[in-house]
Amino acid sequence: ETGVTQSPTHLIKTRGQQVTLRCSSQSGHNTVSWYQQALGQGPQFIFQYYREEENGRGNFPPRFSGLQFPNYSSELNVNALELDDSALYLCASSLGNRDTGELFFGEGSRLTVL
Amino acid sequence: AQSVTQPDIHITVSEGASLELRCNYSYGATPYLFWYVQSPGQGLQLLLKYFSGDTLVQGIKGFEAEFKRSQSSFNLRKPSVHWSDAAEYFCAVVDSGGGADGLTFGKGTHLIIQP
Image (tube, rainbow over all chains, first blue to last red; front, top):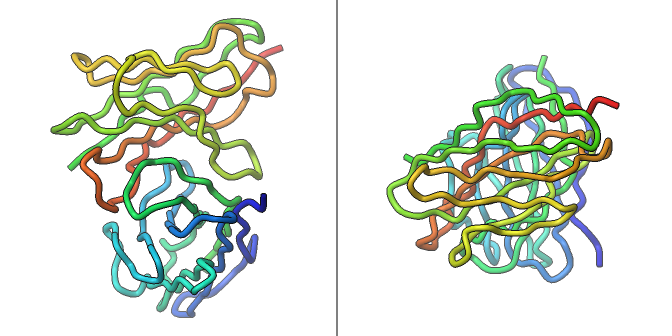
Protein backbone atom coordinates (compact mmCIF):
# COMPACT_ATOMS: atom_id res chain seq x y z
CA GLU A 1 0.00 0.00 0.00
CA THR A 2 1.49 3.34 -1.07
CA GLY A 3 1.15 6.22 1.35
CA VAL A 4 0.61 9.90 0.63
CA THR A 5 3.56 11.49 -1.12
CA GLN A 6 4.19 15.19 -1.64
CA SER A 7 6.62 17.16 -3.77
CA PRO A 8 8.72 19.13 -3.54
CA THR A 9 9.76 18.68 0.08
CA HIS A 10 11.29 22.15 0.34
CA LEU A 11 11.20 25.22 -1.85
CA ILE A 12 12.01 28.90 -1.69
CA LYS A 13 10.10 31.58 -3.57
CA THR A 14 10.03 35.34 -3.56
CA ARG A 15 7.06 37.56 -2.83
CA GLY A 16 4.71 37.89 -5.79
CA GLN A 17 5.69 34.60 -7.41
CA GLN A 18 3.45 31.60 -7.93
CA VAL A 19 3.95 28.07 -6.61
CA THR A 20 2.51 24.63 -7.36
CA LEU A 21 2.66 21.81 -4.83
CA ARG A 22 1.82 18.23 -5.70
CA CYS A 23 0.31 15.31 -3.85
CA SER A 24 -0.29 11.67 -4.63
CA SER A 25 -3.09 10.06 -2.64
CA GLN A 26 -2.90 6.83 -0.77
CA SER A 27 -3.99 3.93 -2.92
CA GLY A 28 -7.79 3.60 -3.04
CA HIS A 29 -8.50 7.07 -1.60
CA ASN A 30 -10.69 9.43 -3.64
CA THR A 31 -10.60 12.55 -1.44
CA VAL A 32 -7.74 14.96 -0.95
CA SER A 33 -7.48 17.78 1.58
CA TRP A 34 -4.86 20.47 1.91
CA TYR A 35 -3.76 22.12 5.14
CA GLN A 36 -1.42 25.00 5.92
CA GLN A 37 0.71 24.69 9.06
CA ALA A 38 2.53 27.86 10.08
CA LEU A 39 5.46 27.56 12.45
CA GLY A 40 4.29 26.77 15.97
CA GLN A 41 0.66 26.41 14.92
CA GLY A 42 -1.75 23.61 14.20
CA PRO A 43 -2.73 22.81 10.62
CA GLN A 44 -5.44 24.98 9.06
CA PHE A 45 -7.86 23.61 6.49
CA ILE A 46 -7.47 25.12 3.02
CA PHE A 47 -9.81 23.02 0.89
CA GLN A 48 -10.92 19.53 -0.01
CA TYR A 49 -11.43 17.82 -3.35
CA TYR A 50 -13.67 14.84 -4.00
CA ARG A 51 -13.81 13.24 -7.44
CA GLU A 52 -12.14 16.24 -9.05
CA GLU A 53 -14.50 18.83 -7.54
CA GLU A 54 -13.82 21.21 -4.67
CA ASN A 55 -16.41 20.34 -2.03
CA GLY A 56 -15.18 22.23 0.99
CA ARG A 57 -13.05 25.30 1.65
CA GLY A 58 -11.59 27.00 4.68
CA ASN A 59 -10.93 30.69 5.24
CA PHE A 60 -8.33 31.17 2.52
CA PRO A 61 -8.40 33.74 -0.31
CA PRO A 62 -9.02 32.79 -3.96
CA ARG A 63 -5.31 32.98 -4.79
CA PHE A 64 -5.18 29.56 -3.15
CA SER A 65 -6.56 27.14 -5.72
CA GLY A 66 -6.36 23.47 -6.43
CA LEU A 67 -6.96 20.63 -8.80
CA GLN A 68 -7.67 16.96 -8.44
CA PHE A 69 -6.94 14.62 -11.32
CA PRO A 70 -8.72 11.44 -12.44
CA ASN A 71 -6.14 9.34 -10.61
CA TYR A 72 -7.02 11.35 -7.45
CA SER A 73 -3.65 13.06 -7.24
CA SER A 74 -3.84 16.76 -6.51
CA GLU A 75 -2.16 20.13 -6.87
CA LEU A 76 -2.22 23.20 -4.67
CA ASN A 77 -1.51 26.47 -6.44
CA VAL A 78 -0.78 29.72 -4.67
CA ASN A 79 -0.57 32.94 -6.68
CA ALA A 80 0.90 36.29 -5.70
CA LEU A 81 2.86 34.82 -2.81
CA GLU A 82 3.05 36.80 0.41
CA LEU A 83 5.55 36.49 3.24
CA ASP A 84 2.83 35.01 5.48
CA ASP A 85 2.40 32.12 3.05
CA SER A 86 5.63 30.66 4.43
CA ALA A 87 4.50 27.41 6.03
CA LEU A 88 4.40 23.64 5.84
CA TYR A 89 1.70 22.56 3.40
CA LEU A 90 0.19 19.21 4.21
CA CYS A 91 -1.81 17.00 1.91
CA ALA A 92 -4.12 14.35 3.32
CA SER A 93 -6.11 11.67 1.59
CA SER A 94 -9.20 9.83 2.70
CA LEU A 95 -12.08 7.77 1.42
CA GLY A 96 -15.46 9.38 0.86
CA ASN A 97 -16.65 12.95 0.58
CA ARG A 98 -17.68 13.50 4.18
CA ASP A 99 -15.52 14.50 7.09
CA THR A 100 -14.68 11.58 9.31
CA GLY A 101 -11.28 12.79 10.35
CA GLU A 102 -9.61 9.59 9.26
CA LEU A 103 -7.03 11.37 7.23
CA PHE A 104 -3.71 10.04 6.04
CA PHE A 105 -1.14 12.81 5.80
CA GLY A 106 1.96 13.23 3.71
CA GLU A 107 5.16 14.66 5.16
CA GLY A 108 4.47 18.07 3.69
CA SER A 109 6.07 20.65 1.46
CA ARG A 110 7.87 23.42 3.30
CA LEU A 111 7.52 26.73 1.50
CA THR A 112 9.65 29.73 2.35
CA VAL A 113 8.69 33.09 0.84
CA LEU A 114 11.38 35.77 0.86
CA ALA B 1 -17.25 28.67 15.03
CA GLN B 2 -15.69 25.61 16.51
CA SER B 3 -12.33 25.90 18.26
CA VAL B 4 -9.85 23.67 20.03
CA THR B 5 -7.67 24.70 22.95
CA GLN B 6 -4.57 22.85 24.04
CA PRO B 7 -3.52 24.77 27.15
CA ASP B 8 -0.03 23.32 27.41
CA ILE B 9 2.45 24.42 24.75
CA HIS B 10 5.24 22.25 26.19
CA ILE B 11 5.18 19.32 28.58
CA THR B 12 8.24 17.53 29.97
CA VAL B 13 7.82 14.01 31.34
CA SER B 14 10.36 11.49 32.57
CA GLU B 15 10.61 8.24 30.67
CA GLY B 16 8.35 5.67 32.29
CA ALA B 17 6.11 8.28 33.91
CA SER B 18 2.47 8.75 33.09
CA LEU B 19 1.24 11.41 30.69
CA GLU B 20 -1.88 13.48 30.25
CA LEU B 21 -2.31 16.05 27.48
CA ARG B 22 -5.28 18.36 27.77
CA CYS B 23 -7.72 19.32 25.05
CA ASN B 24 -10.85 21.45 25.30
CA TYR B 25 -13.19 22.21 22.46
CA SER B 26 -15.88 24.74 21.79
CA TYR B 27 -18.69 23.52 19.62
CA GLY B 28 -22.47 23.65 19.64
CA ALA B 29 -23.07 19.98 18.97
CA THR B 30 -21.04 16.90 19.72
CA PRO B 31 -18.18 16.84 17.27
CA TYR B 32 -16.01 14.00 16.20
CA LEU B 33 -12.76 14.21 18.18
CA PHE B 34 -9.24 13.14 17.31
CA TRP B 35 -5.69 13.10 18.47
CA TYR B 36 -2.87 13.22 15.94
CA VAL B 37 0.89 12.97 16.51
CA GLN B 38 3.55 14.67 14.41
CA SER B 39 7.12 13.49 14.71
CA PRO B 40 10.01 15.47 13.20
CA GLY B 41 10.18 14.96 9.46
CA GLN B 42 6.97 12.94 9.41
CA GLY B 43 3.39 13.62 8.55
CA LEU B 44 0.56 13.66 11.04
CA GLN B 45 -0.50 10.22 12.24
CA LEU B 46 -3.89 9.45 13.75
CA LEU B 47 -3.59 8.13 17.33
CA LEU B 48 -7.26 7.68 18.11
CA LYS B 49 -10.73 9.03 17.46
CA TYR B 50 -14.09 9.39 19.19
CA PHE B 51 -17.33 9.35 17.26
CA SER B 52 -19.88 8.04 19.77
CA GLY B 53 -20.46 5.33 22.37
CA ASP B 54 -17.91 4.45 25.02
CA THR B 55 -16.29 7.67 26.17
CA LEU B 56 -12.93 6.00 26.81
CA VAL B 57 -11.24 5.19 23.53
CA GLN B 58 -8.10 3.22 22.91
CA GLY B 59 -5.60 4.12 20.26
CA ILE B 60 -2.30 3.05 18.86
CA LYS B 61 1.03 3.07 20.72
CA GLY B 62 -0.67 2.54 24.09
CA PHE B 63 -2.55 5.86 24.10
CA GLU B 64 -6.10 6.38 25.31
CA ALA B 65 -8.41 9.37 25.57
CA GLU B 66 -11.54 10.14 27.52
CA PHE B 67 -14.40 12.26 26.21
CA LYS B 68 -16.13 14.30 28.91
CA ARG B 69 -19.12 16.11 27.49
CA SER B 70 -19.76 18.14 30.65
CA GLN B 71 -16.24 19.56 30.51
CA SER B 72 -15.97 19.75 26.71
CA SER B 73 -12.71 17.89 27.05
CA PHE B 74 -10.92 15.07 25.29
CA ASN B 75 -7.68 14.49 27.19
CA LEU B 76 -5.02 12.10 25.95
CA ARG B 77 -3.30 9.74 28.38
CA LYS B 78 -0.58 7.14 28.46
CA PRO B 79 0.40 5.18 31.58
CA SER B 80 4.12 4.97 30.82
CA VAL B 81 5.87 7.08 28.18
CA HIS B 82 8.80 5.97 26.07
CA TRP B 83 11.53 8.17 24.63
CA SER B 84 10.04 7.56 21.17
CA ASP B 85 6.85 9.38 22.27
CA ALA B 86 8.65 12.73 22.04
CA ALA B 87 6.71 14.60 19.36
CA GLU B 88 4.06 17.25 18.75
CA TYR B 89 0.52 16.24 19.64
CA PHE B 90 -2.57 17.80 18.12
CA CYS B 91 -6.17 17.56 19.18
CA ALA B 92 -8.73 18.09 16.40
CA VAL B 93 -12.48 18.26 15.91
CA VAL B 94 -14.85 18.04 12.99
CA ASP B 95 -18.58 18.49 12.57
CA SER B 96 -20.32 15.16 13.10
CA GLY B 97 -23.15 16.25 10.84
CA GLY B 98 -21.30 15.47 7.65
CA GLY B 99 -20.01 17.80 5.04
CA ALA B 100 -16.52 18.79 4.09
CA ASP B 101 -15.46 21.59 6.39
CA GLY B 102 -12.14 20.06 7.32
CA LEU B 103 -10.64 19.39 10.70
CA THR B 104 -10.10 22.18 13.22
CA PHE B 105 -6.82 21.62 15.03
CA GLY B 106 -5.46 22.97 18.28
CA LYS B 107 -2.07 24.64 18.34
CA GLY B 108 -0.40 21.51 19.61
CA THR B 109 1.51 20.35 22.68
CA HIS B 110 5.21 19.65 22.36
CA LEU B 111 6.13 16.60 24.43
CA ILE B 112 9.68 16.31 25.74
CA ILE B 113 10.84 13.05 27.34
CA GLN B 114 13.55 13.23 29.97
CA PRO B 115 15.78 10.16 30.43
